[in-house]
Amino acid sequence: MQSSKPTHVRYLILLMLFLVTTINYADRATIAIAGSSLQKDLGIDAVTLGYIFSAFGWAYVAGQIPGGWLLDRFGSKKVYALSIFCWSLFTVLQGFVGEFGMSTAIVALFMLRFLVGLAEAPSFPGNARIVAAWFPTAERGTASAIFNSAQYFATVLFAPLMGWIVYTFGWEHVFIVMGVFGIVFSLIWLKVIHSPRQHPMANDAEVQFIADNGGMVDMDQKQGKKSDGPKWDYIRQLLTNRMMLGVYLGQYCINGITYFFLTWFPVYLVQERGMTILKAGFIASLPAICGFIGGVLGGVISDYLLRKGHSLTFARKAPIIGGLLVSSSIVACNYVDIEWMVVGFMALAFFGKGVGALGWAVVSDTSPKQIAGLSGGLFNMFGNIASITTPIVIGYIISSTGSFKWALVFVGANALVAVFSYLVIVGPIKRVVLKEPPTNGGSAITGKLSQAHS
Figure 1: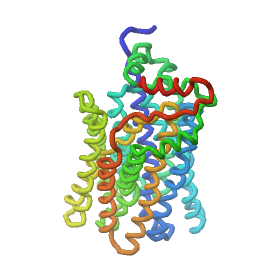
Figure 2: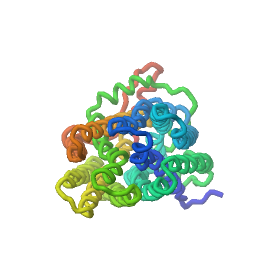
Figure 3: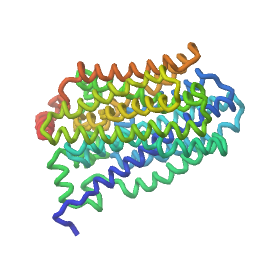
Figure 4: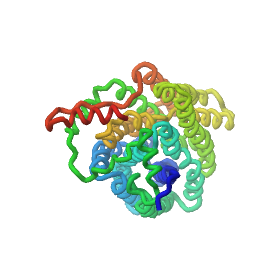
């Protein structure tokens, strides 16, 4: 029976996004926790390990535009469920590469990491689509920050657990445990996730509230049908939009910081700071706690500024710029030797990065309605080029200098370039209105009017 009082099913949807993103990042981080043990068992050097770390990124980047297209074509529910199942299966299989000879094991590990990246490609564009459909504009910053902050929660929750598994049972078991966990979750996803108008638990009042306040509740109504617009021309328009190019550059740099923590940070603690992998697993969770707090705080601050009457541009940019300036403090780790101070500066840097990581809120605010999935995919493609370059660049820096000092300078420089991008390049933040060729009557005019309404 429908009630006149709005339900709050969107918060259940947000919980699901938070949980699936936690699993997503935990599966990405398995290789980092297992990294030092892998190096010993497989006899690989820092450069080779850097390439293995990067394997995920090559496929993840390549899969963004196809993944976004699949989301727009078939809807978020089915495509995302298949994505979760596949990346979890490939994670399980990584636990068996040790059964092969050394060279075969290295190739198999690279290929499986590659397949994990390909399977995860629709995940964040899917998150952005679901948030755009389920949340009003004034709640979108917080919602995006919460699902994005799951990357830190994944480290808080799983780094100590995975460190203990590697220390007690061996590195193979961490892949098997995490993969099975994700396979089970893919089945839960199918039961809980629906679009707003189709969700059995959401009443008309909630759907109307979301729709009246900027939520794109009908985004998946035409899933499975061929859309009208020329997709490649849409992409060209996004790639010639100065605001979007600035957002893409900013996300690339922000992800450069993220992928240091996801790949080389545990290795840094073991090799540069002399910790055991068990201790590194627990220590790695401390900056992540700060990143999680900063991640949620950034979204809350942004939406608070919006409710207080500030422009969308100021409300989104202020936490991004302020947070990233704080994150550049990672370079200070080069000048301290006391362990708690090293961890303190890492925690401060991760906190600042968390506050500033509002890129997905910006995507939900700016994506054209016709191609919300493709727009998110394009954004994530540029951002995750850093998942390829960062592990490799840091691997070469360590190999050539013998230490992490210049690697930390490289990470800090990423934060400053992102600040420059949002200050100088991005300009006003607003939803992109695509130009459509008038091939079928008034469809172009109708499209523009519907976007202006948002």
